[in-house]
Image 1 (tube, rainbow, N blue to C red):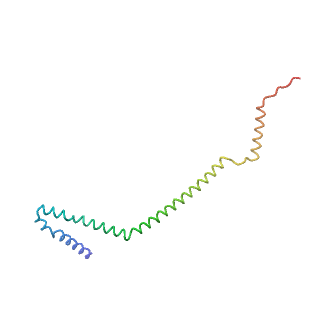
Image 2 (cartoon, helix red, strand yellow):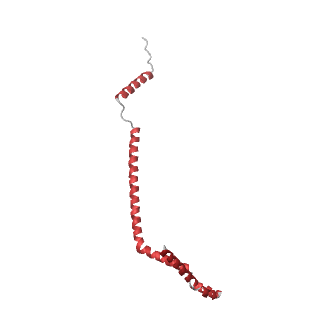
Image 3 (cartoon, rainbow, N blue to C red):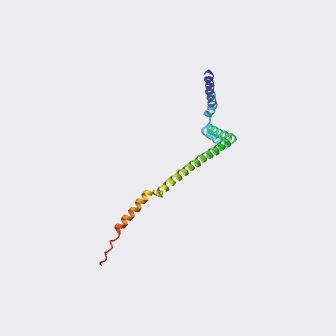
Length: 138
């Protein structure tokens, strides 16, 4: 705990020393001189930001780029394989449904009992629907 507090304390002292180092010089400057210095040098925060971005770009191109792209290629191929498996299962499911629906559309051959019943019914209806033939007078 004590080493962490001492590092924190010295960091705050260092930041303060850097900040207040040129305060007296900046206070003695006229507004025109101050504007000229600001035009010549970019603000410190901008310099730090650009330095950090350059470091990140270097780290990305040197270490992370190839590993990231390799990971993405593997991930995309695994997702593709899963989608193809799902598509195959859906295809099999659709073919099973198609077989069941075709079985319902064209039923099997009726049994002997139903064929005789159907034949009897046809003959009964045929005899009923026949016009009675006139009897010939002798």
